[in-house]
Image 1 (tube, rainbow, N blue to C red):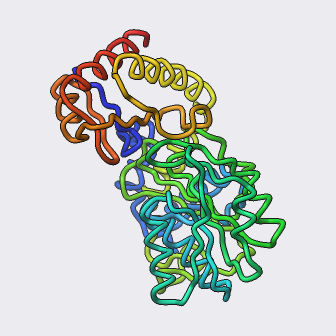
Image 2 (cartoon, one colour):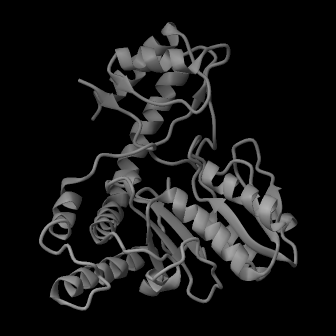
Amino acid sequence: MTLYLDNAATTPVRPEVLEAMAPYLTRFFGNPSSHHEVGEAAASALDDARARVAAVLGMRAGDVIFTSGGTESNNAAIKGIVLGSGKRHLVTTGIEHESVIASADYLARLHGVEVTHAPVDGTGTLTPAALADALRDDTALVSVGYANNEVGTVQDAAALAAVARARGVPMHLDAVQAAGWLPLAGTGADALTVAGHKIGAPKGTGILAVRGRLPFEPLLHGGGQERGRRSGTPDVAGAVAVARALELAEAERSEGAARVSALRDAFIARVLTLVPGARLTGHPERRLPGTASFVFPGTNGETVLLELERRGVVSSSGSTTSLEPVADAVAAAVSTVGSRG
């Protein structure tokens, strides 16, 4: 039996999602821009998916753009809002996903945008005070990850959004890791991104929600689909899939987060007990329910991952980890926690 511990990287497609999208790969295959029965059925499904996503995010249906995933959504949000604003200052942090860091670098290199990396503390937390210090009169956007994709630290999104709003600056929230674990409505964000494959939808599906009042320069130009914010024939089946996955994730969020948090805490306690020198990274309390991140000084990450997989535990490393004794101890901790359900 293999125990898969890498859902932060990708999840299996849920059966309910496959069932929801199947008709739009077969019977209702039309182009939603076509004015005939088959096309109009596809258009109706697209509109319905958009409304269902908006309900979960606490935004308007017209704010929702369907994309190919988190990387595209982050690129489109950052480049689109900054270039549309006419301002040339962006605030983010140095611990964001590569798609955020690279988008900021692109704007700096090719568009003269000045990028400020607001400092985070030793737990990976961006405080409201640190964000306030980074803002300027010409700041076009704040882009922050709701939950860190490596160590799992959760930011106080509402407090950060309030700071930005007080200065008249929109905030983009990268919620790729947070979806399904944390509430997505009520964050105060003006733009928010979700990747379908993190919540049980197929790879290549995603969501970008941007408040309609914000000026926005699209990455893709052409036929004006997605209200002119992302041209190209929409993937109707993908939109239906990610909408269904998001609904399911939200419906199960509270119970699932509580259950998995208990397993996470038991696992962390066992690793810290069994592995000499092991150190937990990220915030000790404000962290994703499904994320446990450790460093094992003096050891190699790929070695411990190979040893764990040999014992039937599939996991991943953001940097470096360990030797066989560490793998034995971690596998023992996994086995103990797994026996509790």
